[in-house]
Amino acid sequence: MIRLALPKGRSLGVARAALERSGLDLAGLDADPRRLSHRLPGAALEVLLLKDRDLPLYVERGVADCGVVGRDVLDEVDGDLLVPLELAEGRCRLSLIAPAGRPAPRPGEQARIATKYPKSAARYLDTQAWSAELIELSGSIELAPLLGLADFAIDIVQTGATLAAHGLVEIERVREIAPCLVVHRAAWQTLRAEIGELVARLEAAGVAA
Ligand code: PRP
Image (tube, rainbow, N blue to C red; front, side, top):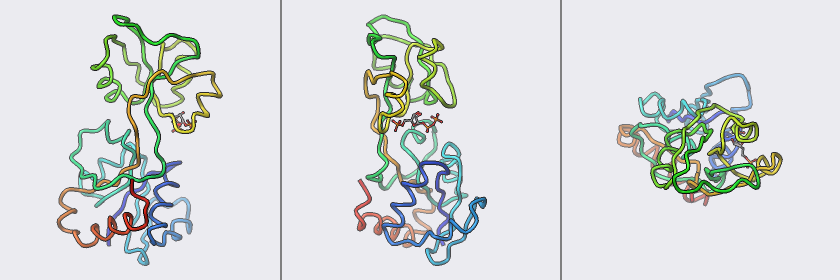
């Protein structure tokens, strides 16, 4: 049995749909919506439901054998995880955003950027001719440049609906983001057959990128 970590919240739907399309029966997840771990013998899985920010740590420490988590979250941690595939659905991007009409940062400008992705933001700034103070927030990032807490934000854009609802625009795409299958390095060896079958199923179902 593989112990698989999945993200709670809206990322769960994408991960679950991909696994179900690969033929795994995950209906047991609905039996008790408050439970955070589910043994699913029919799918040979134990599923842990975790906050996506915590998920890489569970896999890196080997508490979970593998998991599904966004590249945006992986980029913020230092863990040593294998990433054998990305999912085709649920893709989005990390973008520099600002209120419509605000000019892009000029060379030499010192700006303020609100984000919950400080490492990705710092890597992006290293490539720019302008600099910024990073203001780390944990959510509702779009409000910061609207209300003057920051000049810009670096945040996830998927459909663009949240930007449109707030009169914000994308100035530049920073990074393409996809949900990733992550695997504990030792489990890749000790559960080679089981995890290999999971990867093969996802690839055969056409849900891998
Ligand atoms: C994410 C992101 C944007 C929104 C983008 O928010 O921070 O607010 O999704 O999606 P869209 O382009 O499809 O509108 P999330 O729901 O994860 O909440 P939070 O960042 O405020 O925690």
